[in-house]
Amino acid sequence: MSIFGSLPTLELNQFNIVDNVFSMTVATMGAAALFFFFARTSVAPKYRPALLVSGIVVSIACYHYFMIRMSWQNAYVFDKDAGNYVGSGKAFNDFYRYADWILTVPLLMVELVTVMALSKAVARPLLTKLVIAAALMIGLGYPGEVSPVWQTRLIWGVLSSIPFVYILYVLWVELTNSLETQPQEARGLISIARLVLLVTWAFYPIAYAIYGDSLPGAIPGIVGERSAFGIVGIQVGYAISDITAKAGFGVLIYLIARAKTEAMSPVERSEQESLAAAMA
Image 1 (cartoon, rainbow, N blue to C red):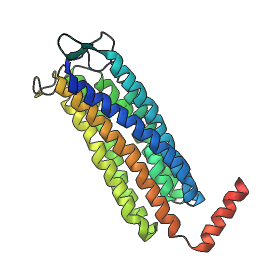
Image 2 (tube, rainbow, N blue to C red; image 1 turned 90 degrees about the vertical axis):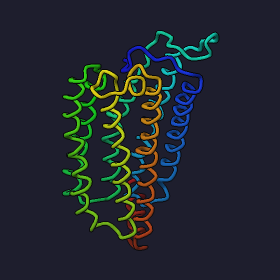
Image 3 (tube, rainbow, N blue to C red; image 1 turned 180 degrees about the vertical axis):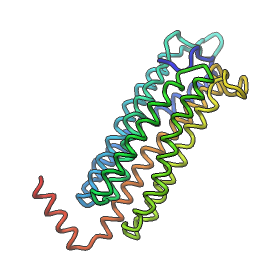
Image 4 (spheres, rainbow, N blue to C red; image 1 turned 135 degrees about the vertical axis):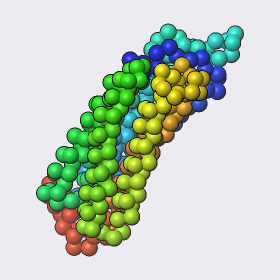
């Protein structure tokens, strides 16, 4: 399903910018997946599940961005006479992105809570709340995303914002209390990881709010579903935000795991390795 309806005519460089960014995103996610899977052995066993989840997240994103790029290329044909790209008549299936988000956004919460290695009494209810809220945020946003009616977009956008605000509350209030239990070397990195989620996630509601020239206040020809500038800006913006929120966030998870591993005493490291060997 395309959320853009009729596709706008694109100049050669506009089409190529989106296509190249999609290509870069596929490569980045794929490379990140390999890194996270192989880097697991460089951290203590109790932090390895966090890197495993990081690898799964970017693997899912790599697949979906590959499909998004294929759909983008199929949705346009090059008009040799005009020297630009026009719609081929095939829909640009942007649903792949929502399919990606409904899987990966809850897993991002799993990454963060897992690498913090909180006690089960704290981690389980915290993780349950974050995962449910993340799934609700994405699920409630989609009906508005595919609707050209601004009133419908507004209703579902507000509903989606409720779990979004709740996630931010948990990240900044409840997790702040848990920072005291973390090694001093990892506290700054954990704070940065929360900030990365806040900054990158902020782009999504902004794009959601301004998308579509059927919305009150939208600028015709600049931001809108039939605007070349609009579709290029949204696709590039989403891709860059996804790279940061998934691959970039995963690198931070790795750095946190390394910092916490290096902060462990030799005895604790030995116990961890022995436990891992016994369970293998």
